[in-house]
Image (cartoon, rainbow, N blue to C red; front, side, top):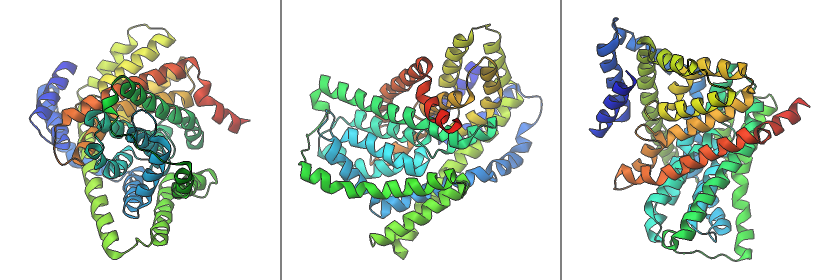
Length: 428
């Protein structure tokens, strides 16, 4: 059953069928092959349930926040400032890509918004400065995943709701691993461009005076971060309301930079609606596929197979990592979380794993799903920003960064304090 599911999905995507349509068609095919009930009759109810979730309101708000920051010039100024500080490293602007994604992740909470915003600013420079295009694209797709690990994070909110875990503590737990993952990404770029210097493109130089003069351009993202995350920690707003406050702060910044206009707002709203529609269509299709997969017993089949292995505590952790890496190849991240976490989290916590620590591990695995083919959403986001070229370029450039994610999971297994130290301060 699992093999058939993977094969059908790969074939559908190989035929260049859009992801949302491919997920929906896969659900219909699996229904015909394995279900004794007409599951497709529930498609309307599934679509309605998926669309009216209050948590999902934060998605268009965070996308809107990213669009305003992009159109107001905040993202461009931030990227230019980081390029002056990071472009001396082997790999040049590719480090700026990762650094900008890390900074922007602290304002958006969405990997899609992070990849789309930084990619829009950075992509015109890839050929101008002679970078290896595949690795450059990989830094954008992988860097965008930091949007769901560095707080604020939509996916952490979902995990917290599903496991009754503290959102503020999850946010604190994600800070050090998030920064560590960004450092690992930059290490991969540095090693690759040291071994193959021609991949690093034209080296940009900046004086210390230019670097210091650029620091004020890093203040606006800090303001947004304090507004969004600060309002949550202060108990003034829910995560969805905090996203709305971030939009208001971004509008104030746009007005400060004299970029706020009716024409700019129309463009912002159009792009927000377009991106939100794409994401919501994928989510609705993924919810339907999730409904079918659950209905035909595929999820229970996989979970039962893992449970029957009789593995030790750490053996179960390895099995969980492999399970998510495989599942992430053909399932949308949000529906994957909703389907698996209620089943897997209680088992792993019963084995002695801390639920906060486990949440960070699962979010990292969800990040990997965003850049693993054939359904990695960030791959398609970055590809959509290009004027031409194959999706295979983005895939090839992103895969080395999956290794960094697995390495980080290993570090967290050896040193769990990397995730649990900051939350423990709150407990104290």
